[in-house]
Length: 185
Image 1: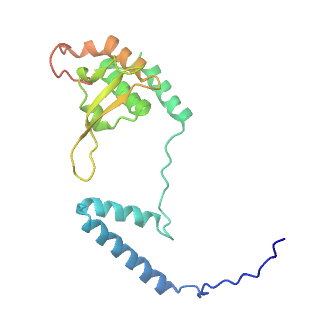
Image 2 (image 1 turned 135 degrees about the vertical axis):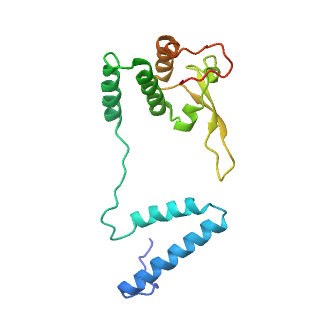
Image 3 (image 1 turned 180 degrees about the vertical axis):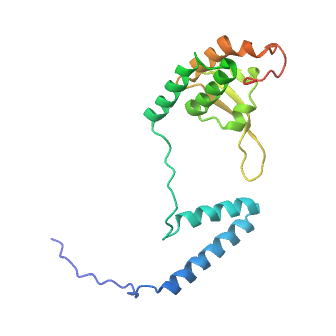
């Protein structure tokens, strides 16, 4: 049978830091962070934004706000209300276009820049179970430029897109056979 051993804590016990020591530590840590980001080749604007986020999350910040994305029921309520207003809105086609683009952003995780750059030819109905969008203007990393990706039309996005193309797109006076005809004119 095993016996219990007495364990002694070998860590040093430090007195709580003074306000001045804490401030100096935060300053040193922030300078180290900025230096590391700059040496990694990040742009000044990116570093400035990162430091702003650190400032907001720092201790003692009273006006920092946590941004929580809306819940699924809240998103559903938004689109249900917006969809209900489509029948009575003053300019149906642009409102339906904006509704469809926003709903696609929500359903499949498109970025705004990707949605704005989509053409009708980027819809690949024959790929996968629901079809896919060919995002040619995706987000690159570290200044590498846009990355292409295939986005599956899940979560009802295929139905949203079919409705828009079949019932709305033709109201924009554009030729759907034209090469590079935009998905969201």
